[in-house]
Structure formats: C-alpha cells, structure tokens
Image: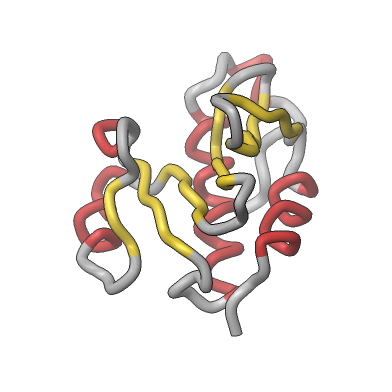
Length: 118
C-alpha cells in the first residue's frame, strides 16, 4: 500500500532535525541544518522528489513511475507522481536514506543528533 502526500510529509517532519518551508511558488521543501534539502513535494500534491544513493540512481529511474528529477538529477535526485509507485515501507526507507545522505555531508559536529542508527 502506498503512502498519501500527508503521510509522506508527516514522516519527513518526524526525521531528526527536519523542518519544512515553501519555495519557488508552490514547492514544500523538507530540509535539515537550515537549508540542506532532502525531499520536495509539489503543493498540488502530485509529485515527490528526493535524493538517492549515487550507485542506485540508474536502477531507480529504470523502474516504472520513477524518473530523474528536473534540475536535480545530477545530484542523484528522483521524482515520482502520485499515486506513488512504491509501497509505504520502501518509500519510508528511501526518504530516511535521503535524509541520512544529506546528514552525512554535514560537518561532524552538526551531524550529532541527526544520525539514525543503522
């Protein structure tokens, strides 16, 4: 069973240090450490984008319903429309991984309290 837009937003905001704001005239941005984005939701609720592991990027965009995110594909972001083509558990795992990929690029002292146990 797939997640709704509201469930995705709640999950993103429950990740350590996550906050949201609105940019670019209609994009809900989930970020950490001030401005480090890990997920984007279109305010119409029809799309979701997030960062994936570089070595898994091509495998993800090969899947039905998932494609490279415009302007962010070079940073290994994917985008999908609703209804999301992934089950809830897999989508939660990928959103959590996106969060942790961004955390891992932060200075060590900033990472404290944001890392999740593997």
